[in-house]
Length: 365
Ligand code: UDP
Image (cartoon, rainbow, N blue to C red):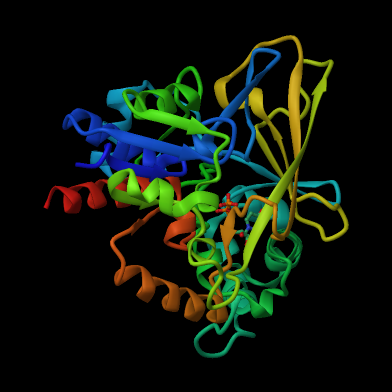
């Protein structure tokens, strides 16, 4: 008999969901987390009474009713709707690409006028789009690509849009209506009381070790449990034996400002190439805060180097092939790999929960 049913490595959403169902089923879990807190990248820090998204803006959105009901069974959600704006050299545009954006860009009013302009501009792309640049132009035309996509995307990924895969831009809706809601999903919101309420509910009943690097004593920890669920970077687990997978990472410069309202919206994207940060987050707006001060974070995007937190997998061809090799090795082992880093996927929160729910079903047999 081992001491625990489950060893969960990393305390983000994937582990949280497994931990929750395991606890409900009367199984024991040991959670091993490298950071000094649980919650992974959805963890919030309280500054001036504001829940600060310490690892970047997280807006929960899903069309999966099962996932929505699950999270709502743990915490209530507010009515926050993400409608960021883009700042291109001082010009302000609504996101995602919709009639408000087109109207401001071309001084037009109707969907027909917008369609006509985009139709004309997309003609330069012949055949199937081969990369992000071609995909973007074929979706919204060159003007929008140049002002609202190129600079932002190249800053975010550190690569030319010609070298990036199409699917990244397909995440963004294009609408011929005056609708600034960033997401097409049926359900959306921020947990009332902040994400930490959700995190604490998910990990209720588990034994938790924070500030512990599992990989330093991998064998010792694995001995302790019947099943190991690992949600860290898959290449690190295998000691980078096939080489390093690439990640992008973000860093934040956070400031408290002595004013009530700095930018009037939670997220402003800086889409030109010259501004060194990609966006500024004003955290209080996620929860309609009325505190006398405000907290803002500038977000910078860089290549991942050892010692940094990896955030985004870089799903280009080289990395996908390399990941396949690791995935094959993982298949042959008893360890379960999950989450953005374990599965090397550009997952949103709801997709991580979905994947963890599936994983739990499989664990049940
Ligand atoms: N994007 C863009 N301009 C923007 C916002 C997004 O070109 O103002 C592109 C960019 O390539 C980005 C992708 O759309 O990588 C997906 O954006 P999303 O906001 O979904 O990224 P996340 O919030 O996950 O960082």
